[in-house]
Length: 499
Image (cartoon, rainbow, N blue to C red; front, side, top):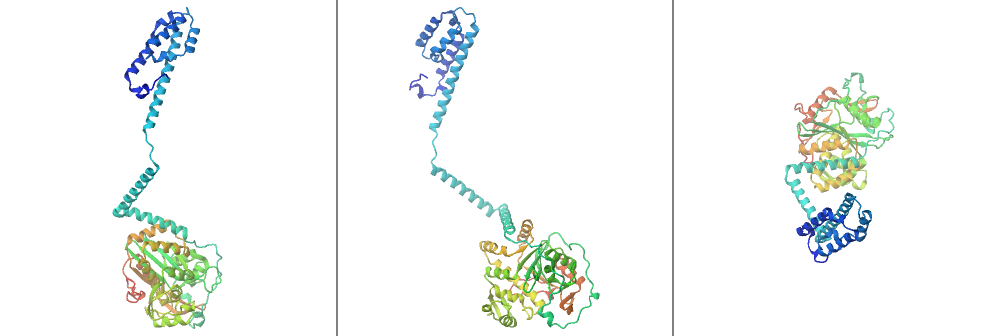
């Protein structure tokens, strides 16, 4: 544009002298009426003289000869269209002014770009790492040292646990074939010579619907499936325990239901309680329990015996106390299926999964609680559950996370993610580590040593047992159930609160 090096060294936008001269020259071009009074040659001469005299007239210096010729040709001497000529000059001046402004802006941007230093890549990485560390430290302080942080951390942990639970556990298979309404007879049944019961004398319960339920009380069915000797795709549930979380009383309670209890099964003849799942799956078992014990169940968790062994082994085994009779019985029978593990002794000892399963299945020897037969067997079930609970309490959070991932695929459940998160959050908030226990039918409330179609069964007083169950689960009032529970002195040092 005709600028020398000295002119490029300063900022034209801020040069007031240049701006004043530029505006004056533009005004001169627009208002010089002498331009139209001279011959075209004179106009060219005058433009040349003006350019020589005033080098600061930027607009006139930049008007090319071709532009001047075009103007003279369109407006020759003697043409009276002065206004058209003036308009053309105005357009040319405006165009030049626009070009100058654009160049000035471009130069300003170029200068600003050269002044802006490019940040080195390593500096960007350092800055990013510093910001991340700052966020992590601030988050750690917030989560670990404030109540809102604790709540947020708990919520995140519970949500994560729920997602893992829903992903890794198995669902109950409701598509399996129903079992024919036949009676399963065990070795003990064939050996029994007990009298046949008169079922016409039994006062059966009448509890329509899903059973009793109260807000703040969750009842989960814990099942152990025994498929040995079963010809169906489902096994019998020889372990049947109602686990209760009573938020209102901040209590954790376990109620064992004796498997040989004679119950009404919807759509089938009266039979042992442990046959309901085998005949019609989980839904039929729910209906059977609600019909006979008037209680609604909020979900179920089931483990078969094979997976139970694996779970105990993943925990590293359990510390259990055996009587002399239990130790001798386990060492000479197939209750411990692996012969090399038939090495148990009287007293407290460390037992692996295969040994613990054999212990939990004993029926013909008295346990440390003094109970025998199926009563002693259900006592052993609760002793084992307490030992598992105590073992879990000794594990760190990292160890528990690893155990959870290994154990969950062995569990079958109908509890979805939302309900699991709700119950887990409830258990954590309760903060209790004591477990109260009950066995039904309660002592003195049933008839035993009696048969139904060759099966050795128990026939309870249902009305009385329903009252005992409701008092224990819902906590209406305290009842004396000490005869049906183990004391803390004979349950492997596990804390048990007796009612």
